[in-house]
Figure 1: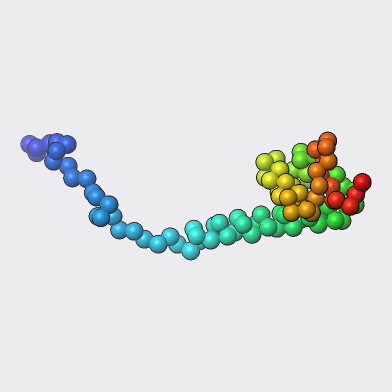
Figure 2 (figure 1 turned 90 degrees about the vertical axis):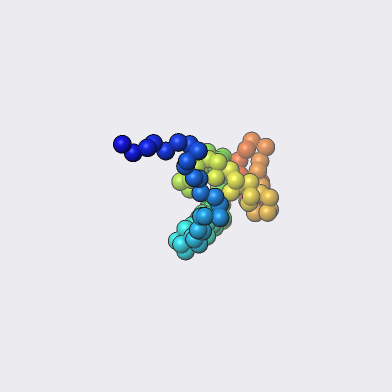
Length: 100
């Protein structure tokens, strides 16, 4: 009958025993792809505001129109406000600065 191994008999590998491999290119390019998609969405948001003069949506309305979630839409719109492309009205709508 074989003897059972006890905890003291088992050897745990140390960090020096682990061989590290570089990530495949597809895994490292994920962030670049996500960043490129975000840039495309931001460009689309800019174009919609320029093409639709008088357009002043709330975050919820813009999120539905651009088909993105509310949190991402908020970040995008606030970023465009920070760079001066849009302004936010006291009632929470976003519009081009030249509109009254």
